[in-house]
Picture 1 (cartoon, rainbow, N blue to C red):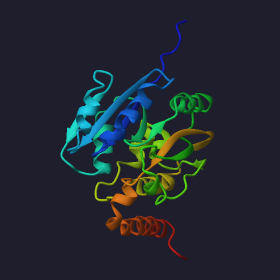
Picture 2 (cartoon, rainbow, N blue to C red):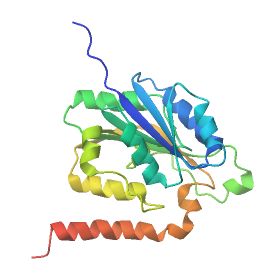
Picture 3 (cartoon, helix red, strand yellow):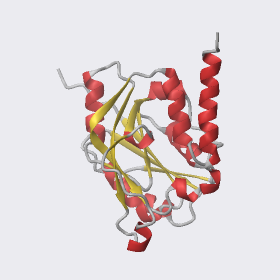
Amino acid sequence: MPPRPLPLVSVVIGVYNCARYLGQAIESVLGQTYPQVELIVVDDGSDDGSGEVARGYLPSLRVVYQPRAGMGAARNRGVEIAQGGFLAFLDADDVFRPDKLERQMGAFDRDPELEVVFGHVKEFLSPDLDESVAKRLRRPAERIPGHFAAAMLIRRAAFDHVGLFATTLKVGVGLDWFARATEQGLKSLMLDGIVMERRLHLNNTGLRERDARLQYVQVVKAALDRRRKRNPPA
């Protein structure tokens, strides 16, 4: 009997003005040890050449352009055209470890009831930073549990059950989605090992969108309101 074909994993990279780092992100996906990968890059209205960087890797990936609509909309556009039964996400300034998808798909093989698999994350200061700039950033974490999009692999059916990413938020997009995912009670697993590396630099979304940080509070409040609605006081 011939071996069962491996499931297709669709990886979505949304990018806005991140030409400097996008190539490294793309190469970390194309270099995965898991062989069945579809990579989709959504250019969210960049004007710094990010689209040209992505198209330089054709035909190994798909590139889609949309007018600037935000991180949530870019990820949703990628999900819309993804063909895989599993979904992964990567920010344009971060990188996957080479065996990320292989290790996470292995977890799904061992437990077919799993709906989402996470892994740990290592942070690093971007090596192109000037020393004086690097001192302004916090110390990178060596190993933290990755309860966010770039550290997870999720079944497409489970993602659809939770719903799309919010498109009205500048920050807290992942926090909002994971709050809703937690409310759905998805069966999940956190792998012990590091599966991706998160770059710290001055253009991280949390720093770039400082004026929108109040939205983090709004996301948390919305989650609490939903919890109270489900479990009203006696």
